Image 1 (cartoon, one colour):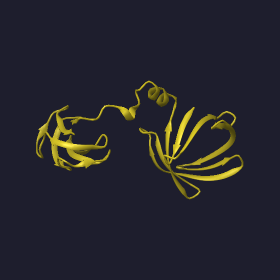
Image 2: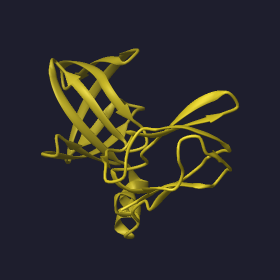
Image 3: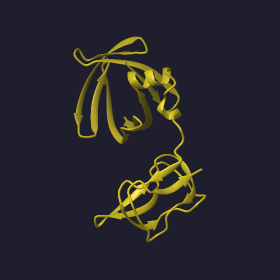
Amino acid sequence: MYKVDVNEKYKFDLDLNEADQTAVLNGDTVSYDVLQEGRSFHAIVNNKSYNVHVLEKDAASKTLKLSVNGNTYSVDIKDKLDMLLEKLGMDTSLSAAVKDMKAPMPGLVVELKAAPGDVLKKGDPILVLEAMKMENVLKAPADVEIDTFKVEQGNTIEKNTVLVTFK
């Protein structure tokens, strides 16, 4: 059982039965057939044809950006576990705010890519850490605002050293 949200506008309850290629969509049973070729799919749902291409996929947040017959859709998916966690008040989107970033390994701070006060989106670069002759770009773990850097360019740091704090 899945909860599917399309473009934050259309909501669907979806239960797939892959054995007989049927699905229950908002209480209605539909038949489907899907052929996958890489990131593209050809789907037939209740005798209607759809060409689907996966434009973006974020497995961690269970979101997709799809092109369906030339139209683009943002899709959020929740499975049984997501729904249970939400029901118990343990929804991952409601988790505590990220307060700091610690070094995942010892190394040398090569470059600071942001500054205090910068507002970053999840995945934006914060700093470059060199470890074992490889440069690693450390990225924002969530949407954050930088409070202070606890390190400077050229600092040698140990694993778990606090690198930056967030507001």
